[in-house]
Length: 256
Ligand SMILES: Nc1ncnc2c1ncn2[C@@H]1O[C@H](COP(=O)(O)OP(=O)(O)O)[C@@H](O)[C@H]1O
Ligand SMILES: [Mg+2]
Image (tube, rainbow, N blue to C red; front, top):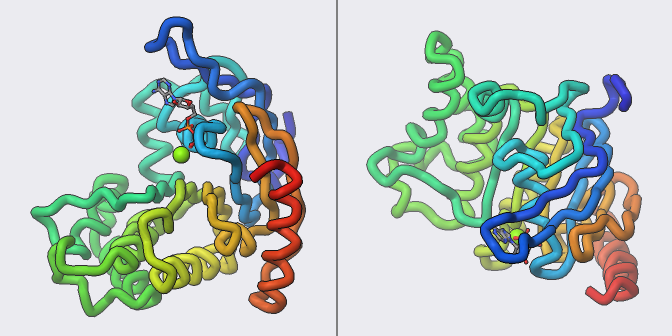
């Protein structure tokens, strides 16, 4: 496997089975993937094709049954649970369809929490960084709001701030706009596009071609296999309708 500084994430012959069922369910059936540094990869495929499971195993939230995951050349699969948690806290950002926030903390303290846990001695730096992020993503004015007093779009932008509060290697997002209306979806995709444009490596699951169209590359899963991949070229915001039509045609060939 490469020790290439242009590669952020690699997995080789990744499989995942769940043994809670009888017979066991093999959900990921041998996936090879290389994500370049700074690349924005979108994962698509029918419901149940293994997208979330793949993300869980790439991000260290779960352990593969076999195969290897390398983050910046380092094998994640051989780490202890404690080491894996540390890597996840400091180097891996995660965003889900639902933002998981603590209801007894305001928006800003929720965003700060993991950064303070990752580096307790660097509190002032974390606060400065979080305040700048909240400003940048247009949620500074709700910093003291409770989490039930902000919109879904604001909450997802808060999730992005929380993820970026540490110096990330990679950001994973699993259907981050899946619970949002179309204007909030645009808000969140604009924020993620901005994150990508300043160099963050991003792997996002979506079933929405209008979101996928912003990626550098779309990969397609079927029954736990990576069956096809499409280089999109950099997103500039121009010709987005054309780009979406081309992507849709490609997806339809796959039965999407
Ligand atoms: N913890 C689990 N135990 C057993 N089966 C699971 C578990 N998690 C997911 N699955 C199964 O794996 C398949 C893929 O699930 P998932 O990765 O969530 O798909 P997707 O995100 O593409 O919709 C589904 O058939 C699902 O039922
Ligand atoms: Mg899923």
